[in-house]
Length: 430
Image: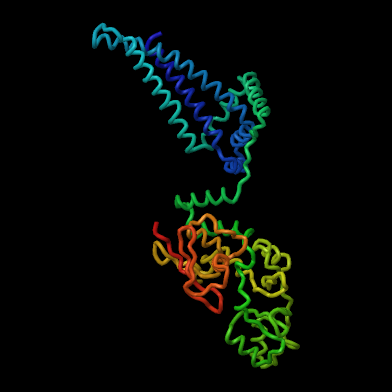
């Protein structure tokens, strides 16, 4: 054969090897979620790719048989095709000298190998890794044809491999369960690439945290609850509503732990404007209020609100004491942050590159995320950064108390009636 014919054979082998290399990476890397979305739009090729992925042994066998056969043929034909021509060219330049055959062999070997590495391996695989779904759908039908033609060989090799895996008790079925960590990694990658804004990233993460955060994260704590007493006279009721213009108030029988229900401010206002008497015993309608345990998650609370058609609840601990109240709006603020409440003061304020001011009631998950801390010690024992300080100090903290952890110094800077109001978190120098 002529040099041109040999060259065509090598180009054909490189093209075939490139195709199978591309197919190997694309079929293995194509994301099932993306393919399922394409199937729902009526894409038949996406369904064929999914079918192949469900039986990876079949297409891997075809690809490996083809790649190995092409590599052997390329090694045999490549040296024989190019080496004589290189030797002839070298003899014209340097004359007949000893060792020209070895030199021409090395040059032909390196040349053919380089062509296969570059055009049959590196470039196709990088292309398939960049566009796995598109490439997989492009090559799936030729692979199915090869699978049909080589079926006896595929059955034999795949059967032997499966038997060996079974003998060694090795699981070969890929688990495609998606965890929160998987979604979080995708969201972080989207934020890093600019596809997601910072607020959108936090929103998605907060949605998944609804199942792990309890209602105490979103509640108004006991000490901040303004409630009405059955024993209050008309002037006291008006004074409370004037000073604290809330839309609803809990109604209690003398003590906050004896909740009767709630009333709406608009009902009191309506009677006041009409110069009608106001009394929690008679005139005003005290409505039933939902009672929930403090162990309920925010996700479960949303379901409870939906079932009961209510959007206000008071929270009880295991001793039947009221620890706080929570509304549907509180859950939405926790979920969406400053997207719905842009004027709410942030719980974590960055002062500079090495220090932060943190509100004492800030959830420990938010602190961990803001400071890039993997885990706080014994997190099951507390829910807020104030709880972390109390757990570490083993006593009620006072101003200037501090704790060092994970390369940070947590210092109490403000106390309000035994409650940690604010901390200063400083990064320790290495």
